[in-house]
Image (cartoon, rainbow, N blue to C red; front, side):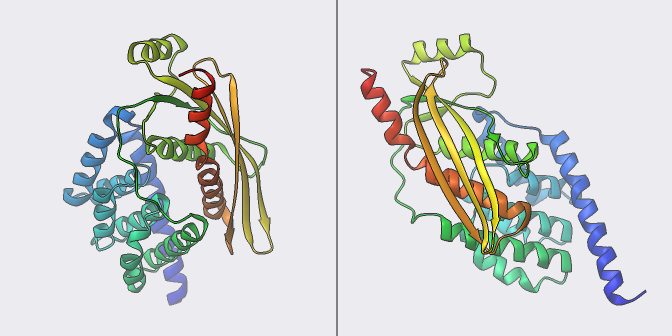
Length: 290
């Protein structure tokens, strides 16, 4: 068997191993509620750094890709690019891309010389994705000081008009949207599937203003230059769901192809729509006399 053929087989075997690890991660770690997000991230970072079982380290790296973009998480994943097992290095590169950790670009560029062909491929995808995200993301501004919560925001499962957007992508988009909302000043994200009665009790006891986000992926299209996504976000009351504002956004990933490019375009479009969310909530609260 030729050397090229052996490399292809090895690459497929590594990806099968990573896919099995993804399933294990979903079963082992599940989804954490916002109240336990920090503890869960700390736990995963420890597993990634200290576990002797490479499958556990792979699971931890994959799960960290769905956590909040925080420096301890980015540092742990960046260090994992030097892990002794290629499956861990591959998972770390993919998670850095998913988090949008542009600060990891220097480390990813160094990892281009990795001895594993599969790791090098994952690193190249991560670099392309992060560079595309940097182009579609406006310059960062200093984060406002976080004070006590004023808004209590529920985040619904997105809908999609495009057949190219599957349920896995919609779940990923919902997680991304909740993470973005959670980073806004004065906002607390309501638990998923919270009952109307419980939401009302929280609002009354804590004197918060309730809002709910219904999002829709209007279109995801491949163009001659890449992928373009258009999204719509409806701001409604919570738990009543009376519409208060419609926010729209669009973004393109130049040269992008496939699922990763579609997700990057969707996330860029959502960021564009979400830039106007604080003003929309404030204006709605003022009209309501809060």
